[in-house]
Image 1: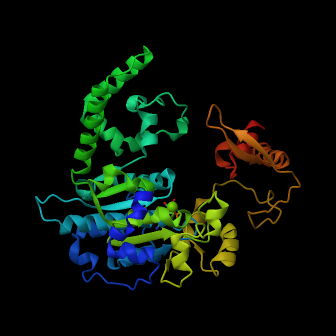
Image 2 (image 1 turned 120 degrees about the vertical axis):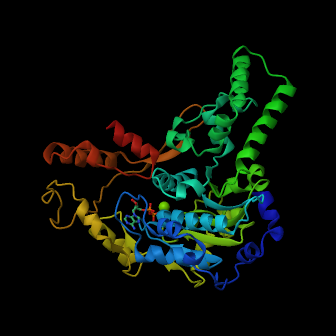
Image 3 (image 1 turned 90 degrees about the horizontal axis):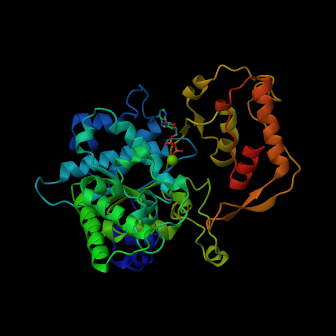
Length: 443
Ligand SMILES: Nc1ncnc2c1ncn2[C@@H]1O[C@H](COP(=O)(O)OP(=O)(O)O)[C@@H](O)[C@H]1O
Ligand SMILES: [Mg+2]
């Protein structure tokens, strides 16, 4: 990341203007989507995936796609559950098809759409949305060439022989492993499918390690080269969408093989400004998607926070009165839950899609709620917050818990299950702290 930021002056003109916080006036792409893409591609870009449903993108989402298509710098704000990631995936698809239309056949083309987020999870969510499209026989399937690039640390959790420098048997959280459904598009899985010799070498290294021996320096050098060559081959095979974290965008394997002409950053208000600048540095066309009214980036250093690192790029532009397009229809919350955030943070603009009300479970919980017609209650619990350690063997971290609250939660869940016959699978208990989660599960 440091190298990327230091070299910002060699970035694109757009990146330099973004870094300086310049107001970026709209620079309209003269040709609309219908003039560049085939009718089939336009249909896919404008219809809601999963395609099995007859649902459609709403007017705010459609407008967002058009703005992102036409302008070199677009900001899209989406309150919770308004389909930010769904919209971002559609934008990425349309821009990838635009790249295909602009490419001259046979020419070595490095240009791609880079879809980034601050965390691995934020990127996986988008891959899930693409899987919906890729699992259907659409015209998109042939042209869309997606690759998901994880961090090197995560790659090691899938192929433990992959690194030889002492940490082969490092304790790694199993949850960090790559999902089976994502493996098909993951770079580290793909290179091993295409070049079986990599796995053969890794198994041999592990056997040696088990016997207390080490491979020769030549073998290690050769193995690393084999892996780097395999990665280069895949990345230069006409990939048009790369999914990775903002930080990974600075990795040598990506910067040396691809030119991310289009850059989309999801969960942008949760990323720090330097993080965002990493993928933006080389981009000619930028789409920022986020919501500065929700959780911000967590800054550990008080000094860094004092110097302004706590304010994201998204928030900086949003509070400068830069044009920002808002997605106003949400699909996640019951309207009664939506009402408060809508009034408090979004000037009452946040609406609930009618499909949310059709999702009723058939259970009668009217008498469970203190206000019978409103399925929401804020409950004051007088407990004490404590700090404890979670995790084990070298990966322990601090987390918070509150015993009285955990007991109350369990009591409510028991009441729902025993008295109101709600199946366990219909109950979700959410908490921001791992220690609190563990306590509630234990109880
Ligand atoms: N146009 C739409 N029609 C129906 N459901 C939608 C539409 N757009 C989004 N959704 C659904 O809303 C939910 C939230 O979408 P998501 O993109 O994850 O939102 P966000 O990124 O804003 O949190 C998902 O279940 C998604 O399938
Ligand atoms: Mg999202």
